[in-house]
Image 1 (cartoon, rainbow, N blue to C red):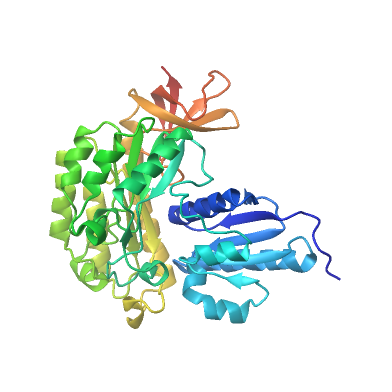
Image 2 (tube, one colour; image 1 turned 90 degrees about the vertical axis):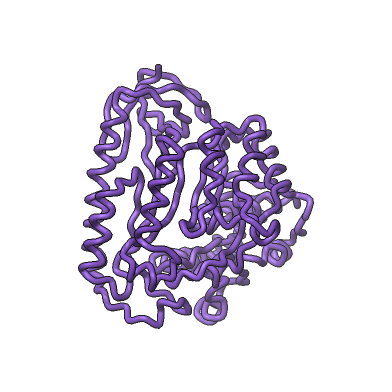
Amino acid sequence: MRTKSIKKNIINIITLGCSKNIYDSEVLMGQLRANGKKVVHEKEGNIVVVNTCGFIDNAKEESVNTILEQIQKKQSGDVDKVYVTGCLSERYKPDLEKEIPQVDQYFGTTDLPELLKALEADYQHELVGERILTSPKHYAYMKIAEGCDRPCSFCAIPLMRGKHKSTPIEDLVKQAKHLANEGVKELILIAQDLTYYGIDIYKKRRLAALLKELVKVDGIEWIRLHYAFPTGFPEDILEVMSKEEKICNYLDIPLQHIADPILKSMRRGTTEAKTTALLKKLREEVPNIILRTSLIVGYPGETEEDFEILKNWVKKMRFERLGCFTYSHEENTHAHQLNDDVSVEVKNQRSNTIMEIQSLISWEHNQSCVGKTYRCLIDRKEGNHYVGRTFMDSPDVDNEVLINATKHYLKLGEFTQVLIIEASDYDLIGTPV
């Protein structure tokens, strides 16, 4: 027989998916803390909120499995209440309510006030920018916009996050100042599309204007840009990037593919020629820029010729950072009406081929770093090593710099100059100067 847990109203937030979900969980935790609630992140609590991801098959499976794990804990008496929010819940709420009715309540991505009410808390509008960081305290994700207006055929994000909605510049500056006062040194700007920022509220792209205000915030030393759409790229940000030392010469620009027939079917609004010209301009106007991209292989109709074009282009462009995903056939997207005609085996082969090419490119780039000194932000200590990052690297997805902790003492969350003495495919080894 089920017995009530002995834990006293501790709310455990479990976060799955991308950095935008991390941000949402942090805002939720900040609201709960302001309401006097005891809240933890991925620890033990008798009330559980699962913030789900619904982007691709693997993410959906992980989210469902996590919900089922918490339901089992509820049935065994270790948990009293289970709530589900986030993208999976937004997209599949009726199905989830039918298939997993043991969840106390489901909420979508814009239902924060309702979720707080279920948790016996009130939404407090005055808490702009205040949240509880789940990342190390020296860096933080800053979501500058929600949703997306792009028509990409393969993407379900607009179904889960809605239309693009920018946060006003003054609110973001207020957030940045609050984070700086809390000890944050690096801001990682995120959105489904950074480059669309401002169109909805200012009637023109205003990312450059936002950056000019954020660099004025005392205490913030690095600003990093994630998820820039290539079509309609606001080139005025390049001048700001090249002039402002606080803005890392780093850009995450997901390109997805390069063969023109695939780009057209994906509804990306660009061509191989236009994309290649943009990348050339990025490298010319921002010297030493580090480009990260993500690619999709196995999209419906992707021929061997299309893949060869992509493969040769990756070799030619030599991205410093690159991730490759296999196509996921998502219902209610434009591409779902196409025949998912590339086998799982071929998708995986193509992905592996791209990553083998990238591994060599990354190794060669890292070898060029040996003998150079870089300013590194020290993220954590792991075993016998301090783990840090250069301006070239974003947390969790990019390279790391390893420093022998048995020979050196470094302060976490601080910058230090590091001489690179050795390099592998995806990591650098250094010694403090």
